[in-house]
Structures are given as C-alpha cells and as structure tokens.
Length: 223
Image (cartoon, rainbow, N blue to C red):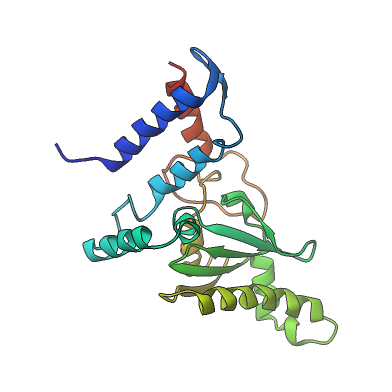
C-alpha cells in the first residue's frame, strides 16, 4: 500500500497527545497539554495543509523543490514555511501579530503574510476603496498614506534579506489574488458558517477548521 503522510502525521499526533496530555479517560473536554506543547497541534494542523504534504495543485518538480528547501533551511525559516506569520496594520494600533485565521480579515485593516516562498500584502475592502480613491495623495490624509506604506516597508526588508527571493503579492479583499492569503488561513468562517462577521471574509472550502480538528484529536487521544 502507498504511504499516506497525512495518516502517519495524524497517528503520531494522537500518540503524542495520549502520552503527554492531561485528561480523564473517555472525557474529551478534560484534555489539555502543557504550555510547552500547547501550540504543537496547531503547528501539525498547518503542516497537514501545507505544500509539503498536500501535492494537489503543485507539479512533482515544485513539490520536490519545496521539500528540499524545508530540509536545508534553518529552524526559523522552516517554521515560517509551515506556519506563516501574519501581521495586522490598522489606524487603531501599530503592527501586531494576529492568528492565522479567517477572522483576522477586516475591511479597515491591512494584513502582511510571510510564508517564506511568498509575501502577501492584503488590503481590507474599505482600505482598498480609499486607496483607489487616492486619499493617500490628499492633504490631511498623511496617516492613511503611512498606513499603506508600513507593510510595504516591512515586505521590502523581508525580501531584501531572503534568498531565493520570495514572490510579492499585493491584493485586495474579494480580489482574485486574495487566494494567496485565504489558502493559508484557518477556515473558521466558511460558506457553512451561521454568523460570519460583518465585513469579514468567507473561505469557500470543505476543509475542516482547526476547532473541528482539535475536537477530533481530543476525542481520539482520550480513548
């Protein structure tokens, strides 16, 4: 039989949670991991969805290239490949890290995603409309001009230091290029969701969310 990497990862994660988790047998709600391990299931969730495991939409050459780069890079870069960093920019606060989740999208925010192979600057729909109207070039809107510039300065710094040079994608909410961000986010809000946040985004996928993944993991770990 062919080797199934996702099945192997799932079994390894269940074994680890069974061995190191704190729980009452047959009671999934009692399950917890120590702070040092608490982020590990999320990391494995993103690994399962990454181009290192999922070969759909990639040629064999691309898959081989991605895996080769993962093996030769240092830990920091490898972590960015598997679980990209997401930074949010808004008028309310300076640049701040946010969860890799669909709920991070808001019409009045700019998101900067660094997945090592690509850097994505994503403008919320309100920001995009203001930019297209040229507010950043008008007197009295210097703060908006600075808000637009900040993620570009950060992306320039990332690209300057990295080899091979990552692909830069600049996109707007609901635009065709937005898929480069949406593909990396936890699909906590999909077309099946009851109450999506107003102004947020919906991810059209049948992939399970991290919450559903954790529910299944906890149920299997406590058996």
